Image 1 (cartoon, rainbow, N blue to C red):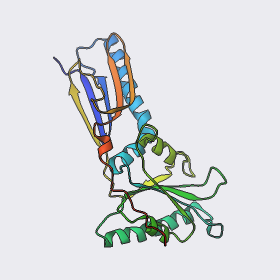
Image 2: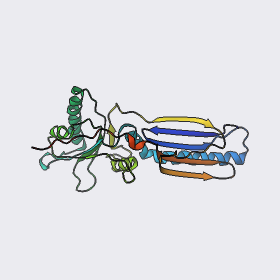
Image 3: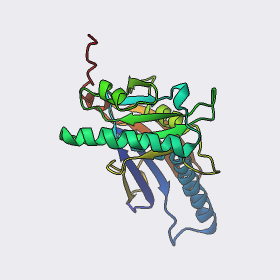
Length: 249
């Protein structure tokens, strides 16, 4: 059977996105070409629509697991930054100190963060995702002298998703139109993307044991497209060692 369809797979840790859409061939007539072009465009558009914030979703999924940390850095009244640059510089100073402490312990810092101030009472603060390495809670707070750090652990289940976290972190844009508000350390692993030809009757589906997050499709007399997103089987088996809180004396 001719390989007249295209399959695209994005793998980010336990998170997987797969798409099937038609290929236009020299044998196609004008009507078939138009229909296939429309179906292919629709599949790509839907993947791109997901990808506009899913770039962050996939980056989180490729590098962080349940048990990692979600610190929120806040400022005491006397230390409120006067600008985004001042706030960003303070978080940068914290990252340098925390990364240096990690290196001394033979570990590395993986981190995604943003800087926000446009909602609530307008106070500057930073949300982040940090890989857990054990006794982190006290050190994170100790190295942040400008206020409090609220820390939760990353959870992934039916109520807590990578998408939900990504949407939350990306909810506030930068100060300029189109400016991204979030950043990440350079050592993060990028999602794996593969595109190849498949046979006409190929479909995509969530494997047994996986958790379906999205299933969209379209069909006409000439072509079919489909996009699925899911947590791969075993997604709940890759938890980080829990970060330990020291008992206060």
